[in-house]
Length: 306
Image (tube, rainbow, N blue to C red; front, top):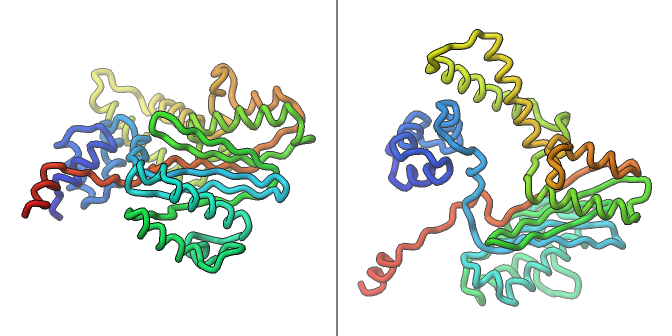
């Protein structure tokens, strides 16, 4: 299939690899971006797979916890510009959506759009259409997660990033100052280090198998290019070490604690006492994984004078 320059540019932004390497990877994978990223990693060319989620889009990530009802929500709603996201009309809509999710246990965005908020005559979908018309931008309710139980939330807004995190804990006394302080620290950890799972037992076998395949191919390639090739048993140990590192990166309890990297998050929680247990968490970052539209000012002006 034909690979466009835009496709190559996108893959370069995701991986920091050279243009020709990106073009070759897309040709080898029939234009499949995810497969191309994996291809580049296996070839030892991709510098950071994590960058695949860093393309920005505008909007807000909003968190809210109703402590009385023990219900909370993290929701992301996108707009085309940061200017629109800061408008009162947009912020009011985000708050309305969050409140509606708390009041209604809806399964997904489409079900949410069909809900009529309390005291109103229009559905969320109708109100969304009205906001698109009045704000004059495309607005999308992208995703949300509704949680129940003893919840704690944190929203980071700085450096252009908006990250909303929420965690559900169990403990002997979740209202104690010690547990609240621990929850705050864990939310900062989640926000800063972006874990995907609580513990290694939560990681699907498919995720482990896929990463192990990447590391096996990468080690094999490195060994073939080495002036002093290593025996198979040494290569296996290298892969084992990398897989341990992988688990530390994606599992909250195995991550180095951000305030004291000499201990893991699990050891930090144990040091607090009170039988604190992480039951669930969620982390949304504004625009992660969304291809932001690129504006070409010269082309825009040219189109206006035709």
